[in-house]
Length: 495
Image (cartoon, rainbow, N blue to C red; front, side, top):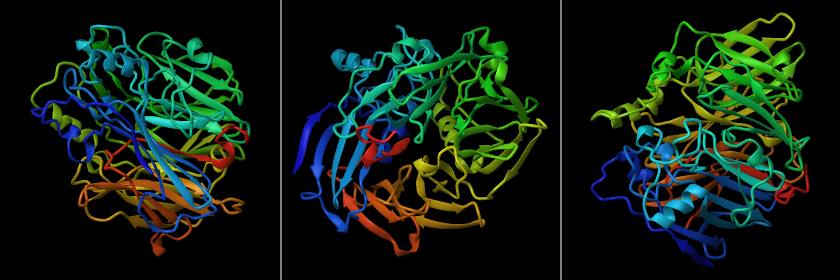
């Protein structure tokens, strides 16, 4: 059965030539429910695949207020629930307070991240001017999905199967107005969720822990020298790693109300290692080369060291924030030009006894969006699955590179000409023993066929090609982040 459950009218004007609203970014308005009895399946869906793959993404509904940035779009989740060799696909908008208000008004009520001066009402996020679009990240916790935006927002909870909005937890009110930022982390062994938020007013950052029953157990201010713009944090079994990076709004201009993102090459990067339930008095700060980090692969403890691995750039870029000129689109394209920013796999080692930092590149190839198995988050691990890029196109994920960090080898899989992927996730088989004993799942938008599909690969061996391809009922725009929810965590049975 393929059923259109709802259709939200897209009201973007035809004369709007912003390229981040067209081609592989073009938004969709129909919300589907479809099962594999009615969808084309090429290959065979594995019977030992049980869980839900969910991908978030920005899917703009209304004509933007000001110059549109891809991160401004309304959040939409695309999910496939796998069980007994079958799958059901659903896509739903994340119906945040801002989304519902704009649906009622029939137009945009908030500007995006590039032109906050156009705001006429209180908003969400670190700048307090944006709409909570909940379009960046999605992670499962306590049997629910949390969809958030990277600039901090409400903790929008949804059902992992139906994707219906659920009542917010009490801690969502406690941390208002700062909210929760994308790239919070979940420890599957304890069920605890570690998060941070940041703002332009003191204190500039908070750090918190939510337990397996979705109760806020810890929430403390973090002492920073000024306004920061972090994007990720790391966790190990005993610590969290907070980021204080020198890619920030120029403080002198910010004091005048001007937001100019500047990379201060004379300011070291700092990483604060804090016990899971620690506060400022327990943080150990480590200095490293000036850099910017979007996404970590994983962190773990190794003797006296805390090891952090992820994708780093020493040449970060962001478009100007404020009144936009004729070159606004070009500057935005530069932000996503991976050839220019050069994100590559990197390792930091923080010695808790000596206070020293050691750092090194792990690869010369440009990759980003690193993911690892949920069961190995915060632990020693072997495999990281990173996206590769076609630098001739904006935000074009062209394939997957699997790093074996133990022996230094890799495998790769390319999606093919005209096919752009999403952030993949590792779904371990039922009764899996080895770390990569399972399947790699992603969503593909095929611009040749003007359609999309779910791609399932054997995580151990890419060379055999797809295990299965599930053709979706419509073409979907490219997305942001994704998650895998194991079958026994869908309803929170497993911590």
